[in-house]
Length: 141
Image (tube, rainbow, N blue to C red; front, side, top):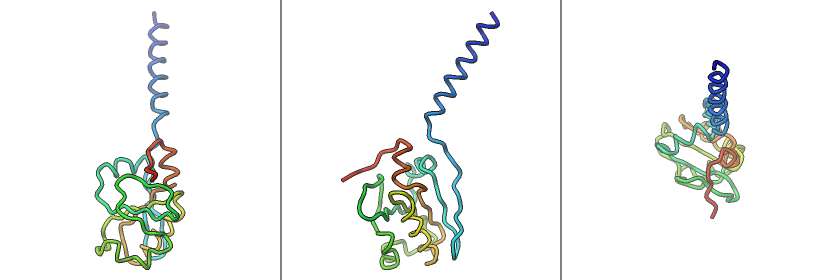
């Protein structure tokens, strides 16, 4: 009888662990220090609930167009951030989340914004590629 109970408990534990294995890992946001301050890298799993409760300006900086995430507010090329500062919030303490295809262009854009005095800049770590790999949908037009 003990063997049956033990086997049943082990089966339940194995099923629970298998179910958890299919969920994207939620990792802590990471501060990235750059000249003038820091920005925050956020994983797709951590960003998903942030997007659902969106309270930030959301900007795709990838060029050329390769898709987008829902609720994107603007498209500003990463290498034209300086020329387009008027398209960013006037309040330099406003929360801004940037993304691109892989995270490289948005990291450059984040660093540019920090140098220009913005204080609450976030970067989707791994960009649209990581977002899609985590099982989340992209919009392609």
